[in-house]
Image 1 (cartoon, rainbow, N blue to C red):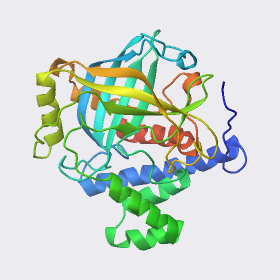
Image 2: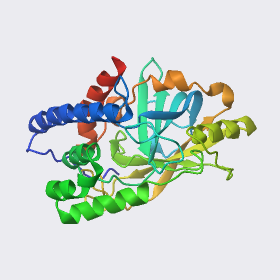
Image 3: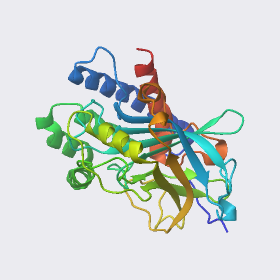
Image 4: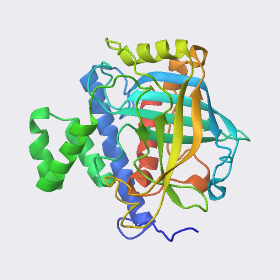
Length: 318
């Protein structure tokens, strides 16, 4: 049985909210350009996730034989085997050494029958540091500016209480990584899953052993390649289903959902022959690359359609 849910639009309508998103996209393009200047780059990088650590073109997403009936939607059905491109990245808008503390990202581009794709985007912390798109843009602008002014500017933008929450979230989420094969990655926002309703999703390591972290600017990539040389790397894909507005809010990306996880599929990276960092780095990923029955939900996700398109236009035309 599907629980009743709804989306709430800032400004009272989808049209009013979309006008705000266009302005957010313009401001995020300025952030993108500021990151390029900081990095000394001649061309803009992605606004965020500027460094591709691992790119894979030969992975496979296999759905469980016992996938619950209501979660069989579109091409995502029991026993389906779907070719998948994988991008693992550092979240910073400026390419940095893999040894530096950072969030990590996982982006899947799942090939669908008929030639379409379905992108699934995740990062290595269960919730967003911001509640909505307005906070996201404000914090991104502050982060692209002088570090000494960051805290007072954030207090002015979102207030003391929210500043403390955001800073605490970032401190917990931004850390060194032993291996990208050992990280879990969360959607942090909801998407529709057909008639099953809203879900959040997570990618978690399956059977991965601890290794020896590699040092150096590209250490995480070196470690992942060495791991693949010893055998396939696997992750499990699970979903949380919407329960209620209180326990599983759609519009607030900073709240962790209080709902059980249901395993739905396994992602397998078969070996070194599947690696193609350069090709994957040139691809654009967006949660809005998806069938209508899987559309992104919530203010942050709705904003990403305009912001990601503007970001991709900025770095792909270089």
